[in-house]
Length: 282
Image (cartoon, rainbow, N blue to C red; front, side):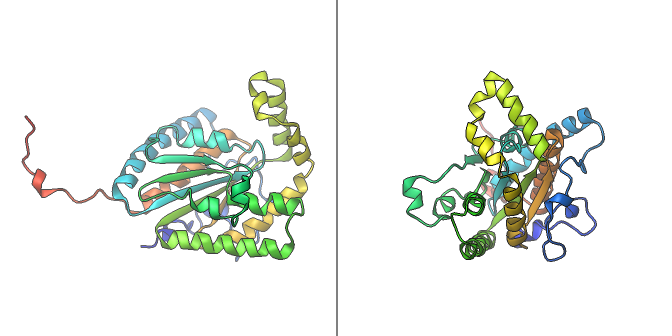
């Protein structure tokens, strides 16, 4: 079975409403409510308890995923400043072993990285057999920041979309399950979270005056996100838009989708070793 087969949300399912389907209906972020809570029970405490239970379930599935060894899992977390990428890593993967789950937080490319194609550094961080890799930001920064700032042309942008699609198809064909989440928050929610960082000295390290300049480009970034969602949500690596004004709901939704994806892979432990039958340890 190709791992991509486990990624498509079933028609009529809750997930399907939030999985980008550009061939059916182009994504329009303005029509997707960032305050929505489609996965919520309606009670915050219950949602938190469900997320905790899912984190424990993911720990067991990650152990099985590692033992099975047929697949790799790449989880891409993409979103504007304060969208909750760090919080998602903590909330969803809090119980999993650091031996099998790794995280990369992508920053601006180094001088050495800029001397190569934009996917060169990304490919080096792909998960191996039985591993889960979580990207905090990703190669999609290369079709966001340069686009908004006019550093690359429209033709170059389209070329990068095509290269990303080809890259992710190659990953899928070689056993990598690609889950991509766009954390969707409102501009007002971002304002509140940035203000919290300003007001709390323990969070000053998270804040930069440059964040305010980027905030002025909010409409441009929303358009850039819409464009990449429509250009790079593919059969082998579709995007899911996550309404993320609620941190609790964000974690619940993502944990549920990761759990369901792993379960759909029909994971199994390796065959028993005949030589261990009847063995007794003194």
